[in-house]
Length: 499
Image (tube, rainbow, N blue to C red):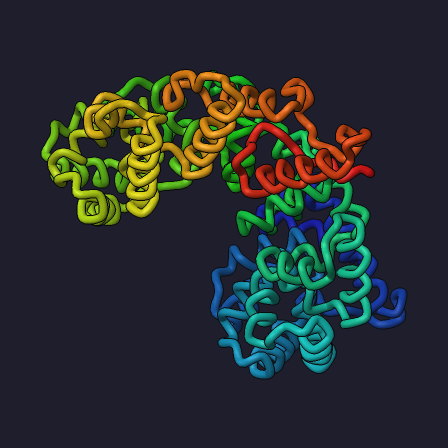
């Protein structure tokens, strides 16, 4: 019997094109020869009635016939298998796993139909052994298997070897790698070399080392991106920067803040920005700038952001359109915050500082980042300003000062501490403190370092720079400055622990 010809006819009957038919026929013909013992046994034409078999298999598993046909693209043997055998295997393993038959079939068929030909005891042994070896709760491991059923065919020894090797190659511990695999189970069956190369190329796109890239993804809970194709990331970056009209460096900075946008379809991302511009009444370039400044916006529902503005405008008793434009242009971070939380912070700030709610709302409308500053930080800044006043550092009425320059209330506490330290040092050195609260932090830092006898052009504080005859004094000064760096008060300087 011409099995190859019969197989081709039946494949065409299912709608496969000639190219696909030839590829599938090659593997099915080999199986036919095996079943017929190279022609010694005659096979019934019913064996090759793929349409009927697909229909019966689909009915037994509770899925559409089209699902079986699509599954055959990944594993053509499902068309030649006895539907009763397929059902038996699927029913046994789904029972052992405690999963409804249809749910198991729907998980396996799209990309792992070959599992329907594996005996249930074999798969279940792998399941139990892998969960135990990886120290994963069986309920969690089952979720992973249903997401990526292919891992059911892997034994515990194979999985542990993959985890150990891959983790070492991308600067993670085995436990960290397993944690990543719980989000993206394909990491358990990808070759360690493939994973390592993908991570290396993805990290290079962002100008990061492998270790820094892996740490970035862990920090943001996006370890699943370790499994993604860097070519897709590269294409997404190129297309998105073009569609949004932004510099690559600007977009990369946004990606580092929200790595998940690396996987966004460029057209989808552009659509979200367009929706934001339309809903908030701003131009597309303005919406783009807001998203680059506050990347979390890209990941949110723009309708919800619009509702946040509605609620916040009501709280602040201000014009909605004007507020939306102000937030987009000056403080996009407020757009993704819960307006009720903002309102509560305003009330708490008023209670701690004695500034009336109406007055503080007026200040916030001038400097929108006051909307999300912690009430305790605002109160602390006022206390420091009072201290400055008492010390004669700030010879102005405090209320008059922050009313005219509300941004001073939003300065970080470390910034205020730096200015206080500088003022004290300048006073002791006989140098006049200049526009203490108006000068940039960078300039204050450099002036402070000059007073301490250190060249501000050298941005690294190292022990080597402090060697000299007055070693005890230099060592004390070095220790003090390292302390300021570690506390975040000296933000533009770094510590080099070199001897």
